[in-house]
Length: 442
Image (cartoon, rainbow, N blue to C red; front, side, top):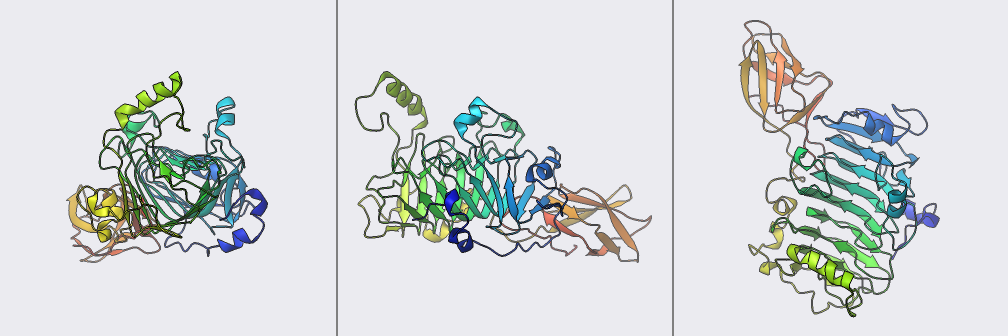
């Protein structure tokens, strides 16, 4: 069991989680460096420079350093990538109660995500309020298709990693402007530490190969899910390791939830309490009038019963009776190999897809050659089309859409090939990695 609190950060904990400098397949658009060697000295200044109406993938490299600040990402299609996982640190002491008393324009968390298709990679985000058992968000998100990989997300408080995109506007006032009315989230190779309900997605979430540490001896729960707005919503955790203080509890929910735990390992200190709906009072005593009110309020969002599914997941020292290998009893009787990120998101999004966009067809439009891609793409640099009769058609417009237009000379025939020069074309949609477009031209 580890406690990644401030007192430990200068010791071996950081050394254990150091990752190599991020290898970028494309040159970053912006660089943040605390020492002044980049385009910006703060992360917030860099993300604020991206227009809120942005539709192109913007890659921001954050060099190693400690950035003691809060960050608010309003634009869509922003990638924030650290130079190294342990060396690039965004931290701030922010309690939720203190924020309500003294609100600012940045948000209640250290990193606040409002735009769709946001990607965070290869860094550490920590809420350094350092108080167990109070709300202290490290990352709070209201966007769709949020990707977080190879990162430490730490807090000693509740709701460390809270991605709360909803369709009713309760948690996202601009719901109609997003790609989906409900949230989809992808996490890989994370280290998450917190107190109560500290990984708590609303919507669809797929989390793989991650470590989850519970620090609160009160043991309310480590993970939480709200899947009440669509029966297919799921929280899938695959090949994850759970640990915590003695008698830590695995999960709970206030609304309908659907948990899939595939190939997970639970430390022996886990309590013998199956994940279930929260009923007030928590101690099982006689409910007060306020307890009864809260229970009644949650009744309409608990329609589908307890949905907790395991496959090849075990507790060190032996399984409790409720850790049953019951994956086949889930809707559709999925097999273990079917439980992938694509399956989690019902085929509508596959963040693990590594294939780049392809050119579907070519059209001639008002003296320009238009390349229509299989999905929205972003142009980096100055690509051009080599024409069969000689010469080139130079890129003119379209970055951020599925159609790129190239200015062609009069009478130009179709292109022979796509010449990227020093630039490239990448997928705009959020993915676990940068997907470079295939160069074949029909």
